[in-house]
Image 1 (cartoon, rainbow, N blue to C red):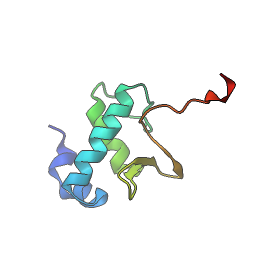
Image 2: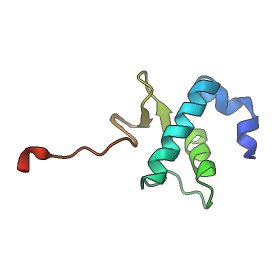
Image 3: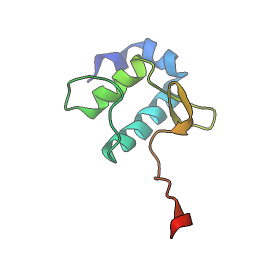
Image 4: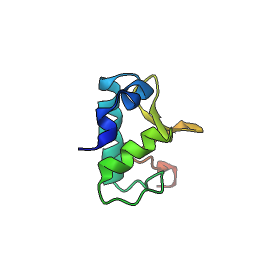
Length: 88
């Protein structure tokens, strides 16, 4: 198990266990869909990468429970891709 998840620091940073679980699940889904990690952390365990992103304040949940990248509040991380259908 990842030691950081045993500590209250990460729970308090995100705002509670439910939000932490939601953030981890959504970010893991994004990484599994091809999103690049936002931290330079050498591990094959994607869960460890997500935990490091949280601990390093790279990602957070906004008020609508969307994963956001710190410094880029307008663009959610993960989710369905947006296509420009005007050229079709």
